[in-house]
Image 1 (cartoon, rainbow, N blue to C red):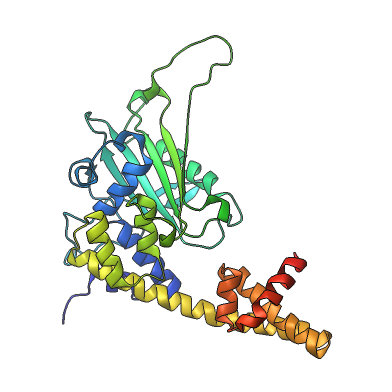
Image 2 (image 1 turned 90 degrees about the vertical axis):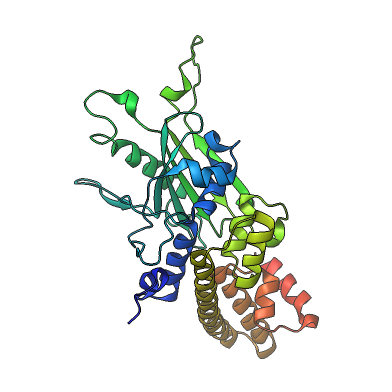
Length: 340
């Protein structure tokens, strides 16, 4: 019997959403993809070529989430895996990072510890600010260096850390943005100048995507938008990666793109089905209370609003999903405007 592939072992159990998230993390674990992220988000690598970052500066073999990469399927030159993604304390519990790895700062022997997290949910504020979680992760990565990177009072050996978050469905005002949060020096009284390396120890970065159609230049936002797009097929993704980003399609990368596209479609189909059912139910209940004519319009309006809220669709996308006739669409645009 053939051995399980890396991807099949990762997705053997769980629902489509969990499987899709696992495939996303697997895709981001490709060194060349991480190199694009690091170049765009970490100042020390901004002037480096992405191929140099992938081949020379990303070191070690970090691990992807809790799922180890099966050795029979791993191309060790292109996929990173290995060091623990777990960080545990007795009081604070266990933190599991999506992807954790180390990179050597160009021109030095210094090392930066990095983690990349994928926030694939629609809500940018899942009950708390994601940024605060990113800063907390930075703090945990620094404190966990005690006993490994430094001992006793040798605080000069602390390594810089970075927490990078890829947010697939941010609020409109944050789309197509990359924002970095760092420690800086600010003189309150008098003027002093501390060496930067003594306080520049953590960076939290929010990468907020906005859709592949909104960008044409080959930057990291377009790269990630293309990779995670549910509307771009596997063949087109492979073509864009090769032609626009000069990324060679290894067997592992091709397989991961295919798997992610398949589960992306499954997640979308199930969400559409659930959203349609919930929308129609809510609309029917509202329609019973109104007159026949007004109730029909209210039913459709509630269905449109429900799809917009549950799936993050625009009003045009929601009306297309519900097959609203073109002649009726201006009426619902007006009704929606008046209901806000």
